Length: 277
Image 1 (cartoon, rainbow, N blue to C red):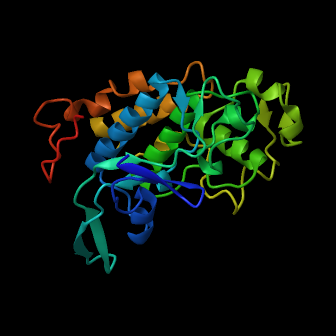
Image 2: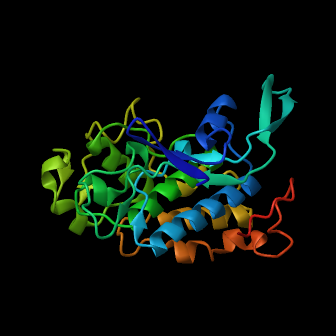
Image 3: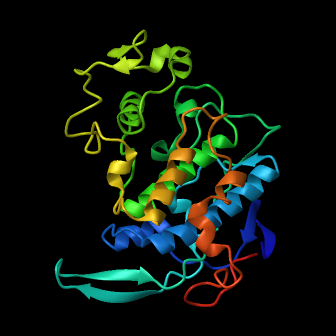
């Protein structure tokens, strides 16, 4: 925060002038995924920033690519002959987490529903209560989106959302499902703990990602260690049970981030900007 002032009863706060959001850059780049080394740098910064919030008993509650902004969104432009289009590569992957309008301290009232739909954790959908782990789920979805260029759970319906989770991540623990049966799809078999094959929310044109395959189907290079480490990180963040979900204290220590841990690597790979702060 640089300064603040009152303007006709409105509290105004001034911050540094930032570039495009990571979503807007992705959109303007025809949803071309970020290279994995850029995903690594961006993801680590987000984890470090939100860890700071969690350490101070605060939950952001609305993490999404739109709320992560580049410090400078200038880019290099290259022409893809095969796809006959220009492609952008951001020069500086330093980012800032913004929009704390819904941020909630542990001691404050917790609204029943938080987070933008696509990044909403299962415990929020099922109205089981939420705390800092719901941010971690959102970050897992964000990292996936940076890596592949599209949203993991593209839906606007609770039932379809839960069904997509089960198709991609496996069965939701029955303990979580049976406590809020009123919002569940009528095709859900509570005793068997699975969705009927005829359930319209588990297949069809409205669910383009649904597949019997697991999350790692979307790995771009399954023979490469860094890609495997990335998906191990994402899987830890997309653990259903909030109590078992990876904490951000553990996330920042994950092997996927090891290339950034040396003093030399903590200098931005292109601009030389120090990101260790």
